[in-house]
Length: 581
Image (cartoon, rainbow, N blue to C red; front, side, top):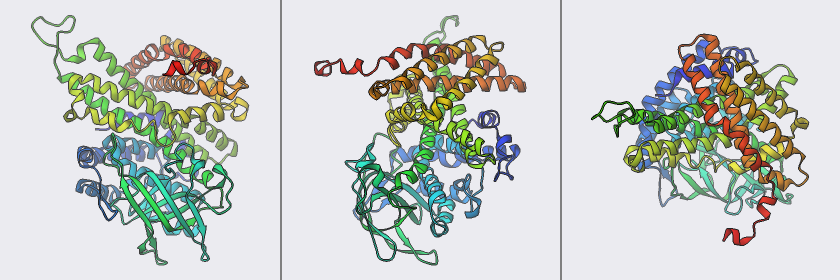
């Protein structure tokens, strides 16, 4: 069962639902309504979606010779109930049938959906990103044609970037777009790794495709974005003839077997230009930034499910005799310090991740809906800073936590029937797609640190220091280690910004992401402990203990990462080929 009480507490304390409810467009939102939504979503995901997780892994998607892809019957029924209940529309524009809740609420629902079945969750996640891009950059005609059916879930959406020679280097893509006399475009090219590119759960699939118009400049500056539907849409909104889009094959993957990952062929397919030519990457980043936060949520969602399963197993499995236990009796493995330590690592990092990601989502809401321009700009900058942490640090932690889950299960963790391996196999993709975590680190160091002359990171550091200062009485050890970690952030950030050779900064970027992510996680975990104490919650003492544990377990290590950040490219270039081979 999703941890709905904890989710509601983080929404109240970190995302600040009461504040969000006062923003333009959220007049219908209040704390009680949001809590009801979370409770209902938790029950729905546990009862309807979670039972499909295993069949998705064992049966998965099936590709047929005619290019169609079929999904298990259980997926069809879950999708029907999901869209009928309106979960696909939680954060969408009310003008087209959405419920208009803040992104923070949608993020919480997405977490619970991902915990229930990550492979299944990718379909509505990418649909939501397509909705966002069309709503932000499409013409009125495009919005009227596509949004209502995407929001209702009658149609689904995809994000179509990658080609065989253009993965992380999107600017190398070769797909062509040729203008037609009627204002449409003909799209030709092969795309790979297209998540939910073909399936039979919805009436239509709306692909958002990157391609090059004639005489386009090289690189990302020459890329345009097109809407390419699987089936053309008639003037009256009905489904028309099949477009020239074919699924050549689907990939056989380590995990997320219930998500069809497609090789797509566009053979003169009819497309509709979004916005202006050559500005496609700008528009696509609307999708990508949304997707990156929600990939971070995948790390969180799988981590939560892995933790719950591991906790239950550790309470039931008896092996050995714990220190102090009666002679002749086996102890539950949760009584052994090493297992308890791993469980606490899982629990505290999950809570830190949840605080970070909900804060990220709330910043997006403020950036979009606040009436004051300065407040919108500040929130937009904060969201820009937190997004690579949510995606990069969050998915790294998700993989680590899923791995700890395997470890806690012992030999059983290596056996598929326990379910523990699936969590690890599924979440392992999260640090790779939607921009590898190495790219997230580069984005953080090369783009986000210098924003506003360093003012954005400085403001966040000051906020974290305030948390350390006000925590000194309640949790002195955590406050001390957070302050030391903040000092490490300052030292490493200053070194990175001052580098004249960008390779020096790039060499330490991934370690800096780990350093800042761990520190930010501690900041949010301690804020939750403070909020629990202020509210007199029953779990206040437990939250304080967990914050202290996180500080001693993870924050204490942060200053030791600084030498790795500041070693520079010389530490790599000094190694000749013999060091590798």
